[in-house]
Length: 71
Image 1 (tube, rainbow, N blue to C red):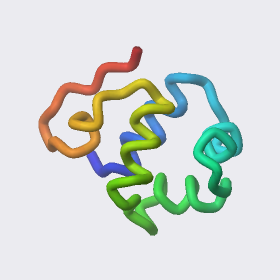
Image 2: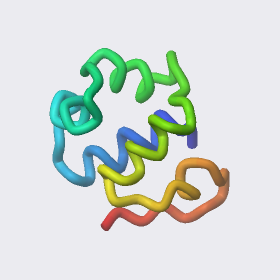
Image 3: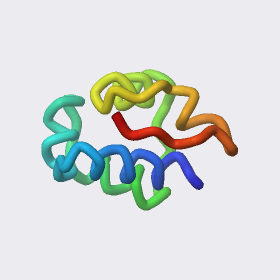
């Protein structure tokens, strides 16, 4: 599963629209959409912010076979 697919899954697990996550990250809905559709890969700073906002261990985004847990 790609980083973008994981971001989408965790965001949807929180029942947040892309716009809500974008506001929390001080970015745009387009940026979130591009990450989730694998058009862009977030840099380490943005990925860390995403993980914190979604309350997810950053390793869940980086490891290929790491089990996905939605809190």
